[in-house]
Image 1 (cartoon, rainbow over the protein chains, first blue to last red):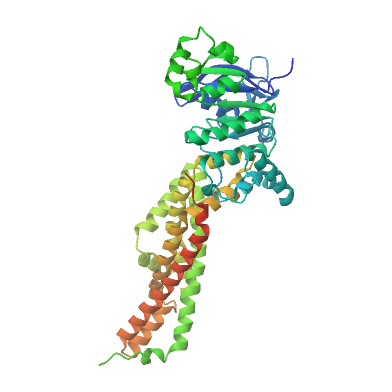
Image 2: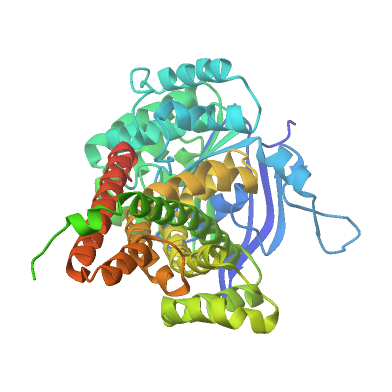
Amino acid sequence: MTRPAVRIRDVHKSFGSTEVLKGIDLSVPKGSTTCLLGPSGSGKSTLLRCIAFLEETTSGLIEIDGDPLGFADPGGGRSRTRLSAGDIRRVRAKIGMVFQQFNLWPHMTALGNVTEALVTVQGMKRQAANEIGNQQLARVGLSDRGHHYPSELSGGQQQRVAIARALALSPDILLFDEPTASLDPELTGEVLNVMRELAETGMTLVIVTHEIGFAASVGQKIAFLDHGKLLLDGPPAEIFGTPRHPRLEQFLETYLDRGAATLV
Amino acid sequence: MSIDFSIVWQQLPQILSAFWNTIWIWIVATILAVLLGFVVAALRRYGPLWLNLLLRLYVEVIRGTPFLIQLFLLYFGGPFIGLSLEPIPAGLIGMTIYGSAYFSEIFRAGFAAIPPGHVEAAECVGLSRGQIVRRILVPEMAMLVLPQLVNMAIILMKETAILSIITVPELTLVVGAIGSQQYAFVEAMTMLALFYWALVEISGWLGRLAEKKLSKFRFAV
């Protein structure tokens, strides 16, 4: 059996005295699209941010393609140890992240955003970096927008630039944190289409989303979180097929307009 | 008695040299104050808590006391603790300290206004801490705080007049002296006001030019 792209073992996360993740176990198969669903406050975004190492878990372990992320298990029942900054950086390099708020750097053009890490982190020559940058912008349908600043682009275009920025570093795993939640409905489609194409290329995607219809059609695996616990985990046919878990049923009712109508 | 500007005008070489002193002292002190202010703001944000509290005290004291008093203390009080300064160095140091407290507050607000997600996005693509400061924070902040920086620089321009009190040979001291020697106070003071106003207009115009150049980077919502 091949190693999973992401393996999460008994992960807990607390902010102060509030426990947001209460022992999550989940594995993300390589080359698959996994969608994390759940009501607001269920912990799905926090879980994704832990996988990106933007948040540090309180306990438990996360492995990226077999390599421990941030903390390692020394074995023999002893408590986990923190890895060196170099090890953390090396494992994090396998992960790309796309945010709800795009988070493009406003003082750089679209091409500048996409090529920044290639030049600054990898030390690539400007010309070679631009070549890669233009390829990635073309991949998200924005080859004519390279010299525009974020403020000159629509929300959907900005999010596609953000996807190109993550793709430029050829990550093994791409994480999406509610990528369409701050977009107008008419701009949502163009971003979902890019994500659908990425899923078809066999890239490993982990997506936190409220787009139920998209999750049901593109996701190969659905993880449903509620109150910091993983309630359901399986292929969409199984999760959305009847009879459904009553908590999921209730959740779907509130998202009828997000493509859940076809499921309910 | 009538208004006669030629009395003052005859002293033009002296006035031009004073004008030049005002300009270079202002520019050098402003640059130093901006740099010191940035360091203070960065240390307050990223340094240990005790340093933050100490620097906060520094900022509060400097902002809470008149520039005139600070300058007096530095120039006349300095020798008591073995710090004897010539007028120009004293003026430069005094202005730098005074300006840095205000600039640090501008930068502090600037740091707070940068969305944390912009830093997270940089972390995610592997930028180091130093690279994040250089490539993301400083340029983003520059465009956020530029109007306030220009504003403060203009205030400092006018504050250079106070340096006359510790005998820095700048515009106010020199033109004021000409006025009292020639009994031409109104002419001298009118001329002074015109000089400062011209300088303020020019620096304001330069500031607007810079803002215009940066305006296309404005934050997208």
